[in-house]
Image (spheres, rainbow, N blue to C red):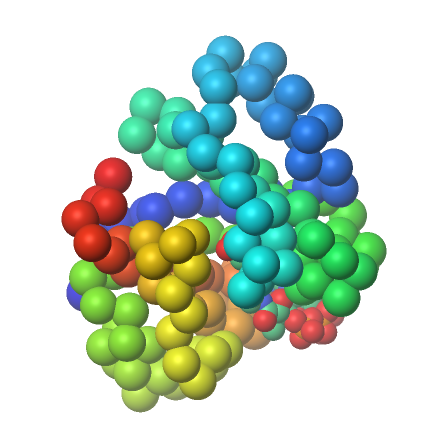
Length: 139
Ligand code: CMX
């Protein structure tokens, strides 16, 4: 079941510079800055009145985020939908004809989140992440 929007992610060339920019723009500090090696990205998460904005930079040229920036430049990279059960939701979406990207959901952020993705070609040009918050990290 889809529970809501978890975050909106923006691909950036330089995370430190982007954090400075968004710190000024939003007037708040990021609630989290971390590397997600499984996804070859580093991220900063801002909580904007309950809506999260994630800035993400590729960790290497072969990262999907680096490739995205090379092709399209900086910009909105994906929208993440919070779900109660990422495996069940991936199965449901697959049956509905959406292309699920990972054959197995990935656990990231030290066991905090379990994620999968829906290919943008099957979702009106938007890459969708589905996120299950594990172990009580529902906020
Ligand atoms: N949003 C919308 N469209 C996108 C896109 C995105 N983020 N990334 C690629 N596309 C489009 C491309 O423009 C291209 O379209 P055209 O064929 O019309 O030119 C098409 O999808 C294929 O693009 P590609 O450059 O060949 O890219 P790949 O197929 O190699 O990879 C994708 C695309 C979505 C499969 C890959 O990015 C992926 O597996 N993403 C999931 C993982 C991920 O993004 N991880 C980083 C974030 C992790 C996190 O936040 O924790």
